[in-house]
Length: 329
Image (cartoon, rainbow, N blue to C red):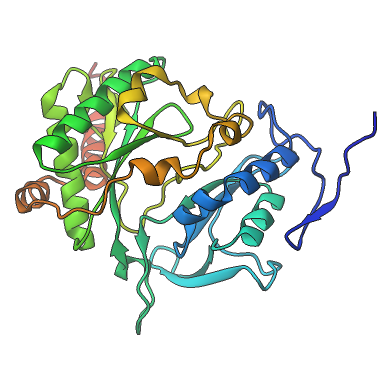
């Protein structure tokens, strides 16, 4: 049997080492990744277009790593946008993946995961992703260790209920790992209000069933419950719909209608299975139009402490308590 070619060109992009395994437990080769990206390019590019992009790459013999800054050897057709990093005190050249050749180039770089920002940047005197337009809110549902997928599905239905009570609609997709992402398209919302609204919706979900759902940022406080993560907003990024993940089987973050949620599992959606399932753009088909967030939701959220900040202070308090009384149980 003839060996498949290791080098070829598609859409003007040279592709190499196509028959190498993608990563351990991937059950897929680099060719499978390229074939997948080409097959889903139309709906996936709709998720990536004009958003600063971070990718997770897996090079042979190395641990996966996230890359934000576009490397200097990138071809000229790969566009980028400058974003100032306050933490790093430097300008980062974030790539923009707006066309198929760029997507295939990233695939050839062994970029498996695609994490665009949750905002589309505005360009003015000071270019900063935080000066962009908030396009959607995200509630990231993270199941506890050792649980089945059904527990996170149950909490997703709680989110659906909380949204409906607030007069909002959302769509759900698998994260490509063990959890789910609930996405709420919004309009006319500044970053601080978007972050506040997300905290309020997470709190309302927890209130519906505190035995199943929690907003506790510290893992030690979750007590075997599903974490409703409200911290992904604004300049944060998220694995987009159709993004593969560095997970066993090379699973994919895939849209699921609410009515089908009880009947799916994350392993149903992989780089091998999804092209056979794809019919048009299933994400656009279930994603609501952008909505105005009610003022009471925003106001409630502003009264809720920011989870990461509260957790940081609580962690320091507990550390001081342990140091002061090392013999305490």
